[in-house]
Length: 69
Image 1 (cartoon, rainbow, N blue to C red):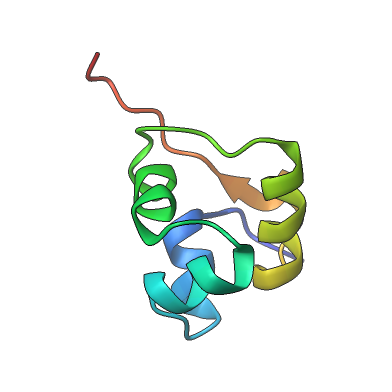
Image 2 (cartoon, rainbow, N blue to C red):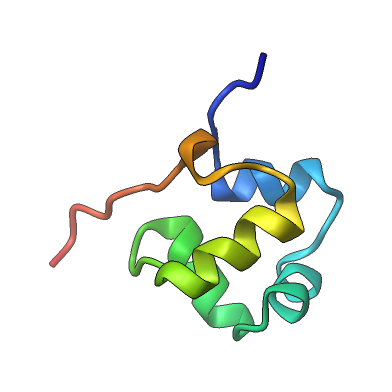
């Protein structure tokens, strides 16, 4: 059974650097970093790419919510 994991954990689990993952997902490295830190959130097409690249369904990913405004 799958265990939910953060975006960073999913990326590290695939053995990818932020830069490598960003290229595969088709976003900027800074954007991916923001998603991992909960600064911003991917849109639906980007979520689909994340699922494909990381091999993890959206339901198993934990998106951090930043408490800073």
